[in-house]
Each structure stands twice: as C-alpha cells, then as structure tokens.
Length: 122
Image (tube, rainbow, N blue to C red):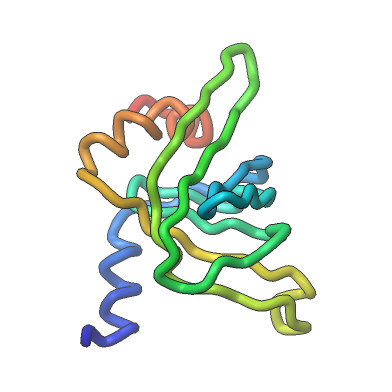
C-alpha cells in the first residue's frame, strides 16, 4: 500500500485553480449537488455536498460554467478523501476527486473551463 502523503503529493503535481461553481456528482443512481471549490487536470475538491460518498467510490463529475459561452464537462472520477462537516472545516464537509482515464482526454474536457478560470491560454 502506498504512503498516503506520497499519494497526495503525486495528486498535487499539477496546478489547482480555485472556483465557486455549482456541480453535480453522479454516484450510482444518486445525484449529489455540491460546489466545485478547486480543480486541476487530475482532480477536484467538492465542497458543501448534499452527501459524501465513501473513499474509493466511482463517481462522475458534471459541471456547467456560464459566462458568454456554456462550458459543460463530464469526468469519471474516484473519491480519494473526504472531510466531514466539523468545526475545523468551518462546518463544511467535502470530498476530493481523482479523475480517471487518460490525462490527455481529461485535459481536453477541462481545458475550456480552466482557461476561463486562469485567464490564460494553456
């Protein structure tokens, strides 16, 4: 089994962009509503979800970003860590996702959103 700290460092090799955007997570036959709090090309953190799936759950992240153009993406993911609603978390729980599948494919799905968030062409 891999050291959890080393696994976290590997997940965090890519830059993360902060945001505050509504999203949905499909978990089996359930739909979880939450807020996309940050995102990278390898994963995301979902804050204030209506439910928290257990670690290792397979989920699908769906988000819409509206400005002048509607950006929509669907990314298959796995829950890699959870934060329960506690005082230390300011009463807001959430969970971290690691995107599944090839980085190149996920990058193409996420690039329009991340370019909007960063203000740069990547």
